[in-house]
Image 1 (cartoon, rainbow, N blue to C red):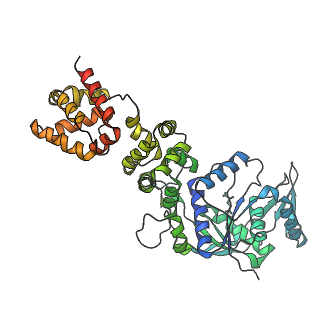
Image 2: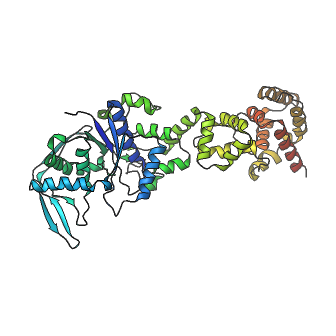
Image 3: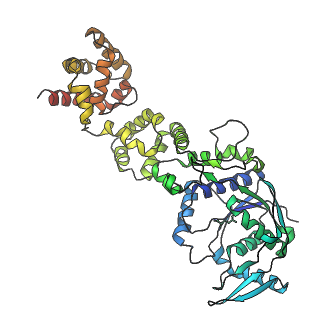
Length: 438
Ligand code: GLU
């Protein structure tokens, strides 16, 4: 008797991989890791009309990006002969009748009308009454097997022991349970149905709430590690208030019985926060490569022109980012020769600030005189100047930041200046003097 544990993730290639599907994949893999079991990827493409190879490829790409790895892969459309064999067995047992339609002949399983029960690993016992039991189409009149039948055959044929999938499949489980019992009762797997992913308003998460497909999250600048971490804890927790947990560590802790029964709310805000945490702790060179992979041409360009400086700007800015795509804006002023100060900001903080304008010459001299252009030296010299001029720090440092970076918010101004370098700082101060003394 082979008592190996086998689970499977079985997406239908009728659309993109959504975060709900991704979470199902994640829980199957975590379960497998925990039990040292096999996790199969099965593409459920028996519906030849609705399935599209483009979606199979997209699903594979999404799983690859998330680094979700399966031990075996199957495609149902390559297994039609297996379903036919099983169908013959059921016909031999006298459990199938045929029904003629305009298109051809459908084959239907005759279900015994009595209550059906199964024991869900998350929800406990679930039952339907005899009146709700209906006959089950096994083969459609176009000659293709139904999902219900093909899936059951595969789960038996591939030795699947635990079916972990979304709660929207509960009604299928009753039907499949009848099929398992008719085909091979001792191979009926355990079932666990995962709660739905909900939006903030409590309805099922859908496009109208925001991004739902995995590749959309990729394009927005999420890290796969952050998506995995967030989805992993959306419905399951290792029993404390842990929020940051690596996929590798979670395998040891995962227990399907601890998955919540009630729906879990997906918060875009929290996902962003978590992504920021992961960005902050990822090596800058790694982040840069990911930005380049995302097609961020400016970053690629800066990397070729001055890799060392780009790495330093990532070191300086990464704790403030929530998405990879934000790096474009966050690092551009270190590299672009010219920057444009937004009109309003210029008006409010520079043009109407005579104290600052009158000090520009002195600021320029002070900066020019610093040989070792470090943030410490900048800090010391500029503060001495401010004291000497009997001004307030904010009268100088706030507008200085704006003329150097064209932004109101940046990392610490002295660190920013050190990284920009003396030449670029002086150029921007001179540009400002010229443009304000017309
Ligand atoms: N292919 C089905 C779907 O994508 C899932 C099948 C299953 O897990 O049994 O909804």
